[in-house]
Length: 121
Image (cartoon, rainbow, N blue to C red; front, side, top):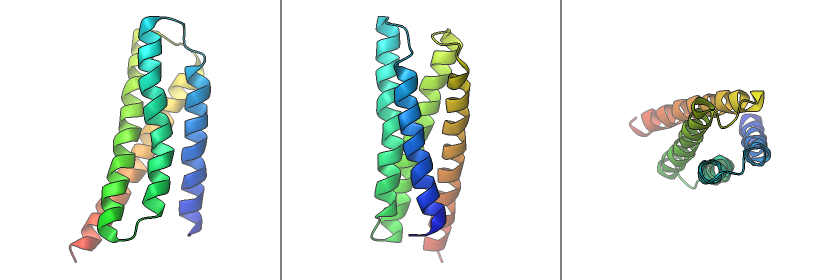
């Protein structure tokens, strides 16, 4: 596998681990448990779906799988925005995770566009 893909695998796994650590800091309210569970599922799915993307057997499969990773990264950003805007968490880690979710979304979106364009050639 190429070095960029390996670096992104490590980065998405770090994101998943950071999300897990962050969710453990949320207050013990029904809302925080619900939103935290959604964030936990989406944040860890970013890493698992990107790993699946790396094992794609075709360009078509790559485009589909990178699209799922993009959806999970974007969903993670949504839950983080809700946590921040609701005031459930005021720790700096929330903003850092939101920035990372947005950066991962941008990377996956660009990859999907490039791969889709090469399919059309």
